[in-house]
Amino acid sequence: MLSVPPDGFKSYDPDGSPNSFTPLLNLNIANAGVVACLEVFPQGGEAIPPHQHQATEVFLVLTGEGEARIGAGPWQEIGKGTALAVPPETTHTIRNTGDGELVCLTIMTPGEDLTALLTGAAKASALDIVDAGRHGGG
Image (cartoon, rainbow, N blue to C red; front, side, top):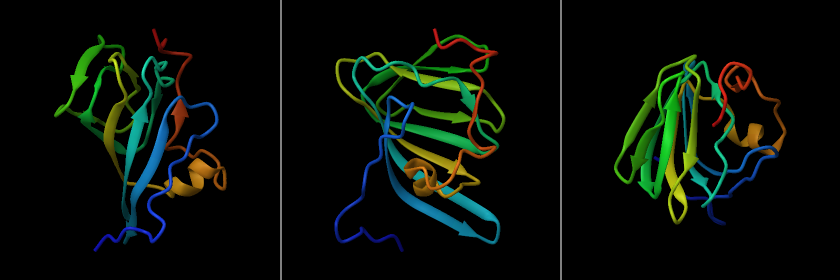
């Protein structure tokens, strides 16, 4: 069962990211973890740096409009109701192209301690590999 903390869920704006993150779920059971968070891409926001994870990452767009790029492929339109699955070790980036916020429910498995990563209590692991050298954000 997931219960809401008494003071609500806390949002984080990590250094170097145009997005804010609100962790909702951080489970690690028998080496099989899952992390879920709300990820908000601000209006007019820049694309997040192309990066990859050792985990599968799924974005479910709850509101807004944007574009996603997976690998060296073309930019693809995403919007409310769109589900985007990114396989492990696949470079990807997302940008907001709409008139408001782009909000996604983002799920990663296996997960890591997302709260510690967002607060700087944990350093980026192999699950956060920026790959700007191979893929441009534009």
